[in-house]
Length: 318
Image (cartoon, rainbow, N blue to C red; front, side, top):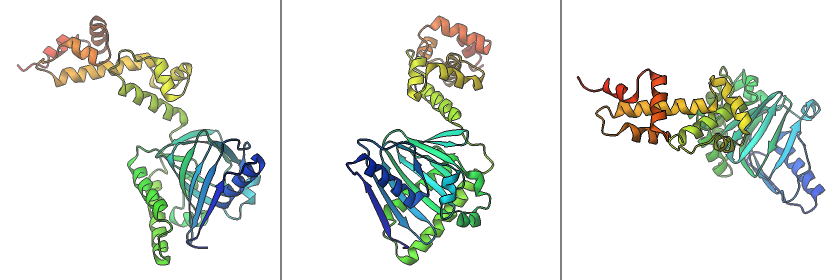
């Protein structure tokens, strides 16, 4: 019924009963899913489904678990659905055919129930999902099927707008009058269509791209630490050192070479910003993560064709 919230609390003491209750809760909001393994101790979950005229808003907090949909599951659904899912806290791993993605806090994932897929929740997860009939989505966004498996990362401005709207929807979903529910639902559909339509012709960010981006961000945040090691970088991204080298193949550099290049680029910017020479070249080298000023000078010369002091002299006022 429109405006009614149905809640499921999964905390049964018996494993079989707990697993059956979790499957039932999943299917009440997301369609015909199967669990990939029995949920064990100390699994618990709370799932709240609020139904509007055309859409449902589902808030879910759950422990580690996994699930999948095969073609036979797709055929058992009463109608095809489109889901727009916000990760409020935690992370969820998705497989869409051969593509694998990780959605982390603040990310938004789009999927439709017509395609087989699977998910894995490695630790406690809090998410909010807007689920709507595919027919409704098709009226607002005819090319919506191309969005299956799309991940809008937390860093994008469009995702930030949609994220704020979905959080507000979760907070106030039971407070709207009948007229307000229809208006809010329409506004939600307009925002989803407007935000995600801009991503239709963009390539999705693969898991490897995402991991490389995280590794590079970690390096840049710690560039001034001369004790920064590849083991630390790999651990920060939860990958092996060997796989870190594989990720950096797309940059044309090894991880170590990329780190040094970024340090040299930063040092050059520091020198340009201090053309009158208030700081010594040695202090700039140390601030950029070099522990040996002689090594820094050699590397700088090789990279830019001039030593750091000679480069600074070209910036001095004539």
